[in-house]
Image (tube, rainbow, N blue to C red; front, side):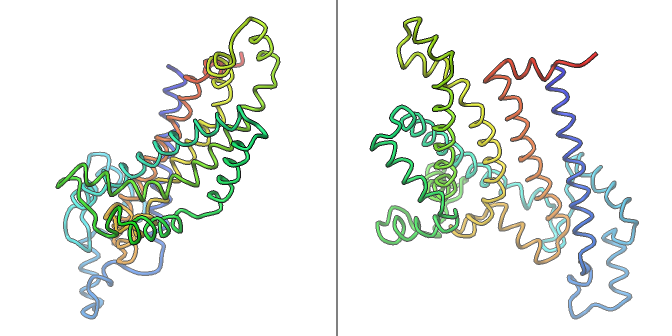
Length: 319
């Protein structure tokens, strides 16, 4: 319990720090939202009046504390560009980005674990060489380029889906998931190749340990040794990688959303940065930071589930 509470408190402190430095960075960038909104009608008097109305004339720290208090209470502010509440603007986009990331994550696990195990059990054989060779090629392909290739082959040539014909989850849930399969696959393929290679190496290393020979000496079968003992120890590095990959996919989905024409948080963020719509930028980045930190915290807690010794060590304190 103490370990869990410490992780939660660390996550909250990190989130506060990220939000502050993001707030500071975007408010130090040259340019004024009031001037941008007024355009050719900007005069010193009108800019000053609009800045006062938007609360931009207050000290920076006071503006941050006001924003933080409102954000915690559920008020993300008012979009300068769209003139609507920020939570209304991004509320429909969050499920899209999270679903895309979750689907890609499931694909990574579904591909990497069986391929990594299969390759480790057949080291040096044709199956192992084929998996490693294919993985090496796939790892060299950036996700956005993989998305372009998938669009070309499966969208334009084979016509498995219509590029750009995004289906909202509010209209058709099945069609929504079917469309997200391809961008999720573009995100997942390079990460799945890396994860399979990592798991293979970890399994090979563990298979050479003394406890494996002891297990065989007790009469256990190869399958029992692999799934009861070896995999549990070998999966720790994979958990670390999956946590980092999940955080990276959340942020990397911004580019894939542009490739496949998905109206997720990425499009909103890019438009907000271009229009200096600070409330939207702050809300989106803070949400991304929250999701990334939650992924890291889940990984830390997952260590204890995969190997209780890790949790025991983390609770140990020097007198």
